Amino acid sequence: MASGLAWVQWWRRLVEARQWLGPRVVEAVFPRTCLCCGRYLRAEDGGFTCGPCFCAYAFIGESFCSRCGSPHLTQLVPEALCARCREQPPVFDAARSLIKYSGTGARLIHALKYESGIWAELEVERIMRQSGYRWAYSGALLVPVPLHARKLRQRGYNQAMVVAMGLKRAWPNLRIWNGLKRTRNTPSQTALSRRQRQRNVDGAFQCGSGPVPVGHLVLVDDVLTTGATLNDAARALRAAGAGSISAFTLAHG
Image (cartoon, rainbow, N blue to C red; front, side):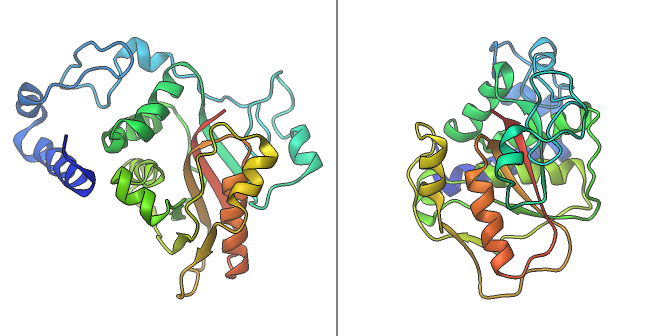
């Protein structure tokens, strides 16, 4: 398997090849399979799930917390705050997640993080285009939550950047800013409790030496669980003088 940066560059060239060779030619040489059921996909399929598996995404509807985007367990008033946000409001102004971390969504997130998931950019674009979700921040500046340099070298790509690139493919007027840096190589959050997650990322981010751009900043990550990572990233942006800060994650779970 190609390593790190070489894999990313190879994938970018393959995406470009689809544009000038035509998808059917590329599909004949590099056929795609559904990331869930493994069946071969058609050339006209836009991403990496077949029709039935795509329909299995658990999209978050209208009943969610207006602050953190957490889906309500019952059909409450759309603007209701969840108990966690009433008890401890997040640092960011508002967050929105598109799908639940379950079923096809959980499979996509795992592939995105652990299976050389640079290709998931096309699946993110397809989800955004076909979900009916209306992007509320026209012209916003996307800020992918960064990896530490050591982890970035190991993985070869940043999964938050893959999500951001998928958003930009769906809405070309969006811009991406890479001024946020991760200063500590924190352990994985997967097995940690909410309090442990908060301590784990405390002070892990800071902005570069340049000024924070003026405008609406949208932190982008793959999944929101407790919000600890997004909170600490937003705290670093606030300390650097940022104004309006929202967050977007592909999944919530």
